Image 1 (cartoon, rainbow, N blue to C red):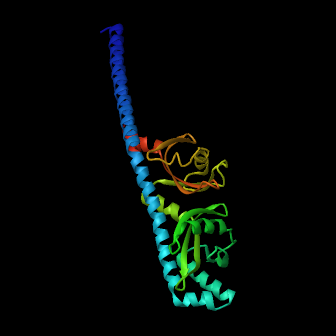
Image 2: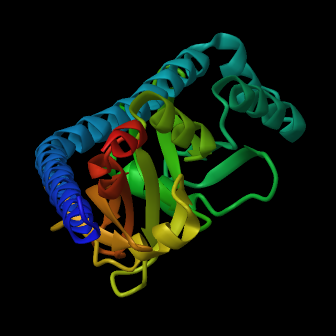
Length: 288
């Protein structure tokens, strides 16, 4: 076998090997693209329901806290010793101590006793005392003559859950107001139970920009969400896709607190990374 014949055989073998490598690479790329498309289609069909489930969980967590606080407050308001302290002691420190005891039992930062006209008569607070009067007035207008009321309100520029419970002796003579901020505990429960992110946005007027009150997202991503025109008309079933720091977030918005006269809003955004949802698992990428 001469040298030219050997070179021809080697060249043919190399060409055949190259063809097989190209075919193998094509099959891998086609498989990768097909899997990516399948994952993307599945994620975009599944994520909206997952986000709505997360929103229902959020509302359940908020309602459970309100029920627990209302139950304790109503029992306390009906307690003879509490009523005696409130109306008969005549000592401000004693009354504030009784209110502070209730505050500690419900885990609130603000507890106040209001007169029938909404005047704040006594108050127990933790730290600086933000103005709760607008929230109290809003709730008092919503509550029935003998019923309680609750809402998400801006207190000192931050979202609070506020509960208003009637005080009777036995007739209606005033109100017990309890307020506590939406805090890291709510974020932690949402993340732990749903593996979804939660961002709360607030604004102080209809034309004011949204600000991030709290979030489980990195701050730059949350800022991208805050730049969107959220409102009652966007809090609809389904999922909104929002670009955020090179990723795409699937978001479901729900208005938690709204006063159209004053233009005060609190919006909760339950979100998930679409990029993470459609990304192939690391071991599968390695296999391909």
